[in-house]
Length: 406
Image: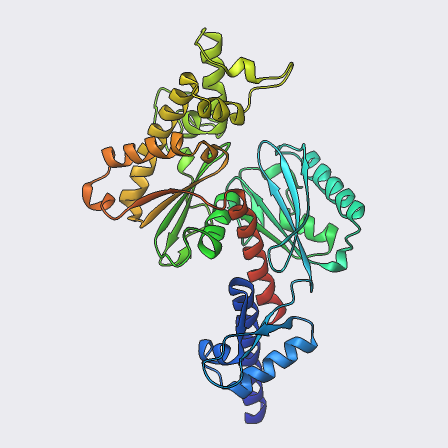
C-alpha cells in the first residue's frame, strides 16, 4: 500500500512539475519576467518560485536576462527561456511547395530552405520529404540531438490524436500513421497540425488575435481554410476537422473540386481558381498586362496577378474583386455561426491587401445581419506566413513541454 507520506510527495511532485511547465510556457510566450511576477502568476510562494527557477537554470532551461525597473529598492532580476537549449524543425507543406525551417526556442529563424516538393498522396512524397530533410540538416550541420522535436503543418483533414491526414491517406502504409513513420525515422517527437489551425494559434499567441476570445482566421491559399477561436481556444471539432470552409457547396452546377464534390467554395476562391480564371480571360482576349509580366516559359502564378493589380491592371483587379466577394459570402455564413470579434485574412492571396479585404468586407456588410457586423473588424494578417510557422512552433513546444515535465 502507498503510505500517506508517499502520496503527499507525489502530490508535491505533480504540482512542482506543473509549475515548471507553466513557467517554461510563460517564458516562451511572454519573453522575460521576475520571480515576484512568476509567484503571483502561478499562485506560488516566492521561495517555491525561486527554487523552481534555480532548478531550471541548472538544467539549462532558464537564464538571467537582466534587471527590470525598480519601484523601490533593488531592481528585480529578470529571467528568460534559454533560446539555444534546443532547436525545432518545422515542415511547412502545401500543394504548391514545401518549406523546411529551423527555429530556436525564441522563435528566431536559424535557417530555412524552400523545396520544390508539392504535396501528393503517395509514399514517394514522404520518402522525398525525408530525404530532403536529411540533406538539409546535414548541410547545415544540425545534429538530431540538438532538435527537441518536429512540427508539421499541411492542408487536409488532420486527426491530431491519431497522427494521420485523412485527406492524404496514402503517404504511409495503411498500418502506420504519418506521425509514427516520421518519429520512427528521425527518433524525435512529431506534432502534426492543419495549416489553418496552425495559423490561428500563431495569430492568437503573437498576432492580431492576441488577447481576443472569438476570432475567425480565413486562410486564402491554394485552398480556403477557416480557423476558429472560441473562448480563447482553437476549436478543432470532434475529430480535428473543424473549419473546412472551402468545401461548402456554393455552386450546385459548378466545377468539380479536388475533394470529389461539385461547386465547392475552393473552386472559385482559391489560388488555383484565381490562376484558372486568369488563364481563361487571357485566352478569351481580355486586355491585361499579365503576359508581359511572365518571363519566357514561366507559368502564371498568383503573385503575377497580385503584382498586376497593384500596377493598376483592370482585369486582375476585377478577378481579385470577384474572388473577394464570393469569399465574403462564405465568411458571412461563418460570422452568423460563430459571432467573432475579428476576421483575420491570411494566406498567399492576402498579399493582395485591399484588393481582397475590401470586397470581402463589402460582402460581409451585404450578407450579414447588422447586429453581427456592428462590432466586427476585418483585418489582413500583419504576421503573414509567420503566423502559420510560429503557430506550428507553439503547438509543438506546448506539446513537448507537457511531455517533458509530466
